[in-house]
Length: 271
Image 1 (cartoon, rainbow, N blue to C red):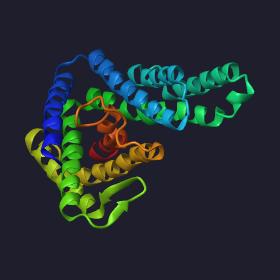
Image 2 (cartoon, one colour):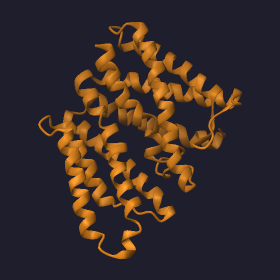
Image 3 (cartoon, rainbow, N blue to C red):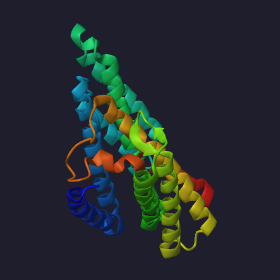
C-alpha cells in the first residue's frame, strides 16, 4: 500500500470509526435503526449501479421499497419476516406485470427481476442483523464482531502481501491467498482475545477464540462473494464515495454474511 493511499485511507477510517462508535454506543433504538438503513440503502444503490455497466437495470425504487419492507420486519416484532418476504414477492410481481408491457422490455425481465429481488435479500436481510444484535446483546458484542472482522482483514492483507503464493479464489479475488487466509484467521483470534479480555470477560475464553475462527472463516466467504459482482462488471470498487476505501458496499463486504452468522452463533452456541 503506497504512502499516498495511506494518507487517504487513515483520515477516512478515523472519521468512520468515531461516527460508528458514537452511533452504536449512544444512539437511541430508532436512531441506530435509521443509521443502519442509511448504510443498507447506500450499499444497495452501489450494488444496483454496478450493473449499469453491463446494461442491466434493476428497478431501484422498487428495490428500496423491498429493502425497507424487510427492515421493518426487524424493527416491529408483530411484522414477521415471512410477511415481509410475501409482500416483496407480491409487490415485485405486481410491478413487473404492470410495467414490463412491451416486447423490448421482456428481454431484460429475467435479469432485472433477479437483481432487483436479490439486492434487498443480500443486503437488507443480512445487515439488519446488527439491530437485534445490539438490542438483545448490547454494543460490546458488535465491537467483538468488528475486532474479529477488521483485525482479521488486516492480518489477511499483510500475510498475503508478505508471503502470499497460493491463490485462494482467483476468479473472485485474484489477490487473496491461502497464506493470507491463515493470517486472517490468526489475527481474528487475536481480535477475539483482545475483545474478550477487554469487555466480554463473562464469555469463556475458548468460546470467544473459537468464535473468532468461525466468524472470520465466514467473512472470508462474504468478501469474495461481493467481489464476484465487481469482477463480473469489471470494476475494482463499488464506488468512490469513501476516499481511499472505495464504496460503502466495499466496507461492508465481510459483514454481509459475517453479521447474521455471528448473531446465530451467539444465540445457539454462547447462550
